[in-house]
Image 1: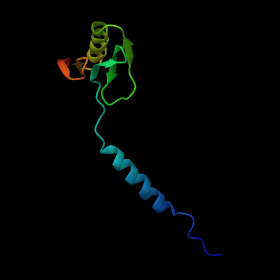
Image 2 (image 1 turned 60 degrees about the horizontal axis):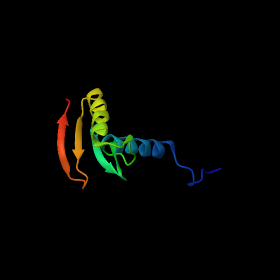
Image 3 (image 1 turned 90 degrees about the vertical axis):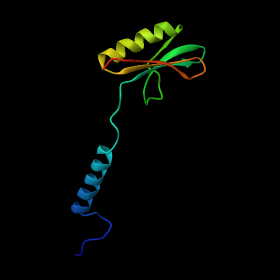
Image 4 (image 1 turned 45 degrees about the vertical axis):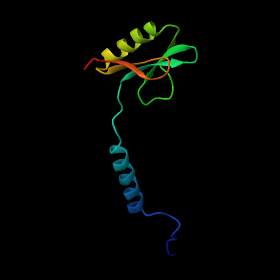
Length: 94
């Protein structure tokens, strides 16, 4: 019986896997920079590139303290934003 063309050969599957691997290898490495941003009526710490917040705080100073702790642990930066979203300051821990 002849083989049907519906099934992929193992070579085609291997090629697809290798292409997927090399595409994922070209992505930028994730950073651990911490952003202190306005969030609702409070302040939040958010890792660079994340949509979700890491922590929420009533005061900006508390959020900055938390962001510094995380940044020191990962040799990253803290980027502090104003209430309007513009950048106020940047602290480097590398």
